[in-house]
Length: 73
Image (tube, rainbow, N blue to C red; front, side, top):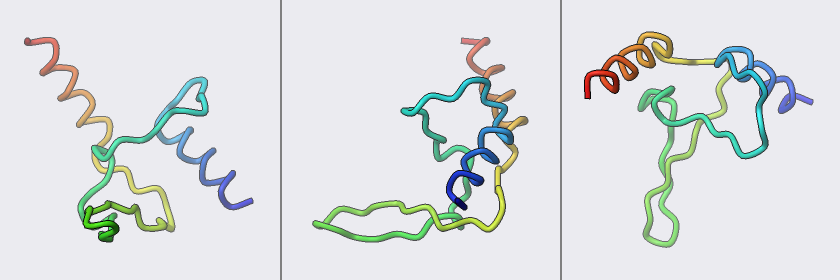
């Protein structure tokens, strides 16, 4: 039940219109503190901590900056 509620919350927070099963939230939306690191088979893996609340770091400003940069190329 919690997983479904968290998924809906992410969809609302990120303003995703019609989500599909293969969508992912990229690391741009998180800070270094949101992860813990684990080594498996001599490979470093980022694992997202279970967040108690949605923690989106400057999403709108970051996306606007990214689009501005893309438009200047």
